[in-house]
Image (tube, rainbow, N blue to C red; front, side, top):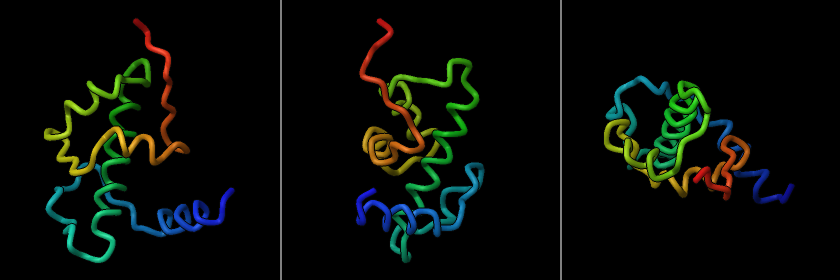
Length: 95
């Protein structure tokens, strides 16, 4: 692994876990690491959502449709691409 990626991964793992079902106003973006906390919460929500689906997969456009409902403040597509160890993205469509 690259040194920069390894450091980012360590910092990501050191962030406290934010429960997916907690209110979104608990985390303030302007606080230290606020953006990363929002990102970690969003990863948790998407991971939980995918675990509830039968196929364990959803098209990115359909997943992004729920941003407001899940109070996800970050771009879903960028989030999925930024965390390849958590999410698998296939370029093959089922259509």
